[in-house]
Image (cartoon, rainbow, N blue to C red; front, side):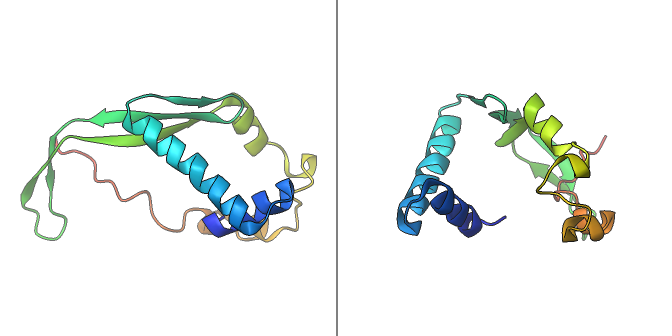
Length: 126
């Protein structure tokens, strides 16, 4: 789902104009970002929690040349899904009306789910 699709869903569900729904989505995203920037965590019961993790400096390798590269310490956002969200995601396909066995997502197979790689992170060298 894209941000535009999210805005459309919010507009439809809340009976708002697309412009109002877009502003609402922007406010939510800005609030999440601002809270994380202040080092606070966000807990949405039944959905999950957002936190910032500190990732220490490390030594990596340039994948093209193999030369060692110093990677500085940084802060990265982290989302941990809640118990209810995990349960909803792992429901049997026939238990939910939105994910029928004939839906395109189920017909695509596992290859479609892994498209785009594994997040582009290189493991640290030992």
